[in-house]
Image (cartoon, rainbow, N blue to C red):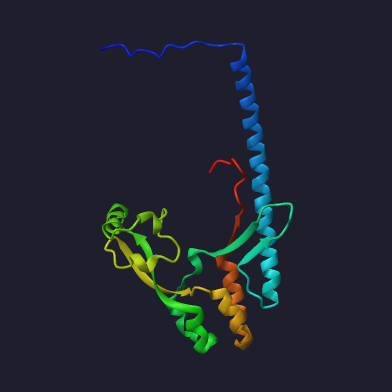
Length: 209
């Protein structure tokens, strides 16, 4: 059996390359420290955005975006997004119809929801066969709001549920004064469960993606 040859090497104990290695190590430690501080501030922005949203919700103003306007910083936004748990079981239909009446279809629509991917590889090939990019529809799971586009696939298990319609918050602001108190309370509790903030800030010049 032939002996594996080792890559020829040399050890350097001093000189410019050692100084640069030390500087790089210091900078990397500083970057890690700054990243931790940035993450802490991001969590604080999320917490403040939730407080602002809840304060507005108490006034029956349903918001989905908090925009920071400050001449000393680039544009910062905390955008609230619906989680996968926003789907309501079909058994809720009677309750929803009783509370929202004719406005129920404006807020919640009956939709197909993919509950399980049986064969990820087959699903990817199906999407490619349509001439589409699989990653426009998939992450690790099906991307939010795109279940219907893949519901006919044999590679997934599909159920039905009530989902908030696109423009849900805008619609709520339009109709809130016409809803019963229990319906408004239901929506507020629902939003508290399914909305979570995502912080967006433009990348600094030269910042790596």
